[in-house]
Length: 143
Image (cartoon, helix red, strand yellow):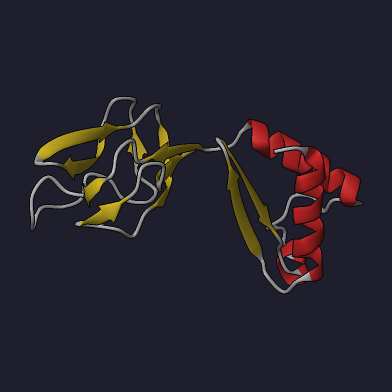
């Protein structure tokens, strides 16, 4: 994603009432957050950007540190647990290791294990469980 698109997204968030925007294009995810003035005054925000140029610079650094998207490699039925009634493999906020099982996708009676491509913390999980996913659907993000 190029900087002009990121700047457009930042401008959009600045003009709207939304407080958070997440956009994924190819393998790059950009998250833009806006805190309220009260939150900034309370110290929840370490520094307030001075201009749109500062926002673009911050967005660029966040893109470089972005989370890694885990996408469905095949069409099939997504299972978040090893068996019905069992706890899911992972939950949001869990720390995972590279190679750890995240999901199982059942395709044509074949169970495909979806493993973590890298170590990190789960920041996003799909709501789908025991439902169909398409090839390329976002299943999870690892920061």
